[in-house]
Image 1 (cartoon, one colour):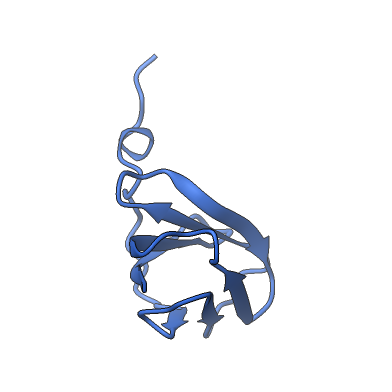
Image 2: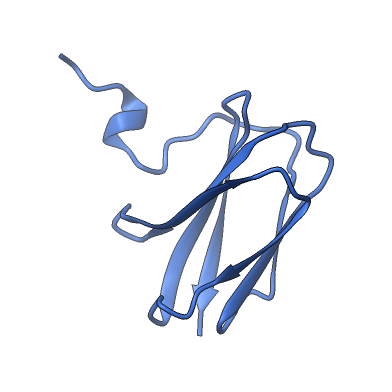
Length: 97
């Protein structure tokens, strides 16, 4: 069975013209905060991936503000992916100091 483009590429995403994801501070140390603005989605999935595409932190939320404990992450570059319940995805590069 052939894999879809999304299965082959962990960073494949559907264009979302309504940006809802804001992250701060970036770079961050122990805690990363992200807020969801203008989101009408009820359940949002968030995933923190490393540069090789491995999922390191994930969860779901319906809150407008989420604080992630990132103490187990090493210094480096990561990607925060937000998936709305309509399938739209948004990705932001985040940096751990």
